[in-house]
Amino acid sequence: MAQGYQIACVVCSRPAAAPASAGTCAACADDSATLELHFDLKLASRTLTRTALAARPRNHWRYLELLPVRPDAQAMQWPVGFTPIVEAPRLAEWAGVRRLRLKDEGRNPTASFKDRASSVGVVHARQAGATRIACASTGNAASSLAGYAAMAGLPATIFVPARAPLPKVTQLCVYGADVRRVRGSYAEAYALCSSACEREGWYNRNCAINPYLVEGKKTCGLEIAEQTGDDPPDWVAVSVGDGCTVAGIGKGLMEMTALGFLAAPPRLLAVQPAAVAPIAHAWQHGALPDPRLLGTTFADSIDVAVPRNWRKAIDRVRACDGAFLCVTDAEIEQALLACARLSGVFAEPAAAAALAGVRRAVAEGRLTARSDVLVVITGSGLKDVQSAARLVSPPTDVDPITGDAIANASHATPERELQ
Ligand SMILES: *Cc1c(COP(=O)(O)O)cnc(C)c1O
Ligand SMILES: [Zn+2]
Image (spheres, rainbow, N blue to C red):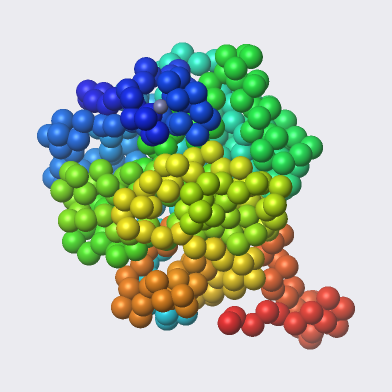
C-alpha cells in the first residue's frame, strides 16, 4: 500500500523532513513545536471503504492506509486494537446522561491503550533498521513497549519514575526489557531517556515527540467511527496526561469524518486530574503553569506535570468544539467503583478519570440528560490493584469447616458506599 503522507510542524506548518524517530521542528527550534503526519486522504479513500474493511482482520492493522508503516505479514498478526464497545445503561444513569458506552482498551494485549502506539512504534523502528528501542513512561507505555518489543524480538530500554506501580514494573521485567528505575519524577525519567537515545542512537518511542506514534493512538478514533457506524456518540471522553491520547483519538475521528465515515466528529471531553492539570490550565490561560506549583494524583498514568503534547491536544479539542475539565481524586475513586459495579469493567484510576469527567460535566451543565457519550477506558484496573484495594473492604474470612465468619480487625474500615 502506498505511504501517502507528509510531515509538518504543528506551530509554523512548514513541511519537515521525516525524522528517524523523535524530532521537532528545526525552524521553530522550540520543544513544543512537534511534528505531525498528514495523510493523503483522497488516496486512502480509494481503498479504505466500508466494504473493504468488512473483509479485513479485526485488529488495528485494518487501517494500514492511514498508518506510517509498510505491510509486515508477521507484525500484522499481533492482536492490537478493535477493542469492544459496550453499552452501559446503569452507568449512564449514575453519570446523568441518556446513553453511555465504554470502549474497553484494557482488553489490549498488555492491558492498556498504549498498545496502539507501541505496536506501530515497534514496526516503524524495525523498518527503520533500529537495533534498540527506548522510552520513558509513567508505566503503561513502558510495559506496552516491552511487550511489543518482546513480540518483535527487538531489545528495549525503559526508564520509569520511582512511583510507577509494581504491576506495571513487574510486567516490564517479565517481558525482558532493560529497566532503569529513575529515583525521581516522570519529567526526569523523560529527560534521561531523551539524552540516552541521542547519545546511543536508539529509536525513541516517546510518543509526544515521535510523530509516528500518535498515528497508532489515532486508531482508537478510527475504530470509534467505524464501530459506532450510523449512531456515533455526541461526545468522546478521554483522560489526559501528556496529551497524545486525546490528540490521537481526535485525529482519528477527523480523518474518518474526512473519509465520509462520520457526518461530523464527536466532541472531545478532555479530562485532567485537578491537582495536576497543566493542559486544562493552558486551555484556559494560553500557557502552561509552573510545574513546581502543581500537586500529584493517585491516577499515576496521568500524573504529568510537564506535558509534551499539549499543543496538539488543545488544537484538537478546539477543532471539534470540545472542552477540558478537571476531576478530583475522590471523584476518580467513585468513578472507578461505579464503572466496575455498574458495567463490569474494571478500570485503572487514570481510565476512571474520563468517566468521572462525564459526571462532572453534567454537574457543570456542559453535558445534559440528553447527551450520548462514549468513554475510552484507557487501561485495566489490574494495572494498579493497590489503589483499588484501598477503596473496598477485604473479603470476609470464614472458618473452613463451618463457613462461619471469623472476626477480622481490618473489617473495622467500612466499605465505601457508591455515591
Ligand atoms: C497514558 C495514559 C493516559 C493518558 O495519555 P496521554 O497521552 O499521556 O495524555 C490515560 N490513561 C491511561 C491508562 C494511560 O496509560
Ligand atoms: Zn515550526
